[in-house]
Image 1: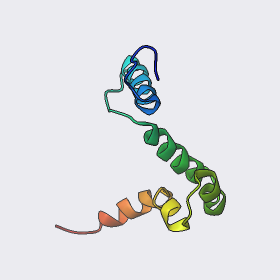
Image 2 (image 1 turned 90 degrees about the horizontal axis):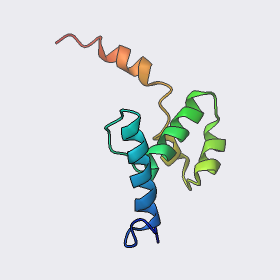
Image 3 (image 1 turned 180 degrees about the horizontal axis):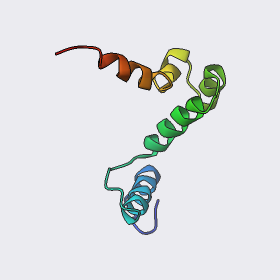
Length: 86
């Protein structure tokens, strides 16, 4: 257990620490450990990482799960949405 907060789980303590540091940096969006995992996975793919390697790093049993973090084509998709004339 965390000595500063004896009833707080180690996971909650890490999230609390991350949120304190983020707040100090002027970031007010709440974060959790998964925030960093998701961002790291998405960034790795965006920087040329292969989906198969990413799947192993993230310990995903299905490539489909890893694909949820693949944002490489989002900019293209956003541009296509602009074609909708409403």
